[in-house]
Image 1: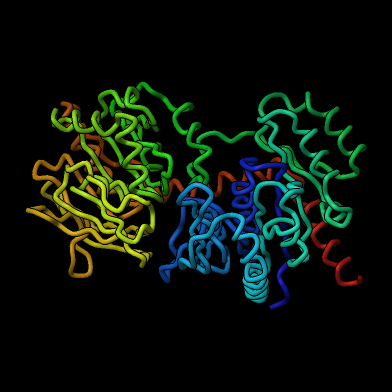
Image 2: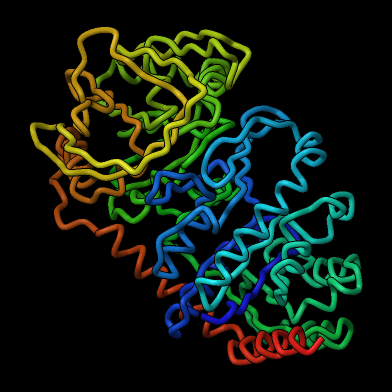
Length: 505
């Protein structure tokens, strides 16, 4: 196979939609018959994805691989940074924890190692695929960081990739952002930019025409597309910066109220995404005790620092409110991973892996105790879930640094590999598991919601949406949307011209 043809997307700043645009192009190139792979050299995210061999990468790259119709591997994201304390992150190299490092030390000591890892992964992908769609991070104009950056223009140079710069018009000042970013680039880097895309547009495109003409004349770079904002896209988000948008556009006139606790180190919050597609569910992410109110389902999601987030629950008053709800017995409380650990009697961290607090009392709602350990469990899991007098085959994935044991009589939740994962209270109103993705199992999710409906005196709803089917439809919908609003034929020609220029130089 010939060397892959690369294309890189960078942004004027974070949250301009780079991940979504890369996902779209992965689907588009795959639809057009190219063996396509996503790549992001270094990702910083608390929302991660487990590969088939039990390794951990950024969730965006896993989703992009799904859009391309391939299995995810760690070469698609060789370096993952997972913030766990102020100014410190866990460094995950090819899917396995490497060490915890502060930002300054990481820049000083890991730079050359990182470049070697990136080059090796690019080489592997280039030999096995026809197209590589590369995602940058933040902005290439961070002049205070560019001497040792390894995710934007340095990667474009390593891959010899042309770059499309994305600007977010929703934030305002899109032309200033695009022009300023281009002007702050080194001339060789600016020359690598083959054009720009304006993302998240709303309104009458004709009102933008004069600005597009001005930009092309001023910068010498073509506008390759203006992509309108796409509502209700059922594709995983990666960055918790978008959580504020999760509830604001949703219909509140629904029969079931779901409250998701958004603590500071929330991780894998996309576990709750299937509920957004349900016709009777309103989902709220909350950070304050007064926001909790009287929901039908409370979800404690994953956490990158369980002890610190448990302290947040106490300080905010949410722990007390949750306990008061449980006494009423009409709210279901569901903890996943770190949220499951919080439900227990206590959490110990004797080696100070996550926190300086070596032991902390849990919410004491399930008879379990957790010890934070050095070894990290990362695995795709499946088993038989027993609840509501029924059995459900479920799949999911586990990412946790801790071992949880029962301290009293408890009822196991999921039987897997001859052991039990998770447990629940005798009245089945308090449930905990290490299985991320538990709500993505359609049959179990339907029964859980219908149990809540019966408790409220409502008729069950059957034949609910298949989330996996909705997901595939969302990839196709996104690809069609982007096709309609970018100059795909021009981009194709610019990519090929750039490759020819590299060969003749």
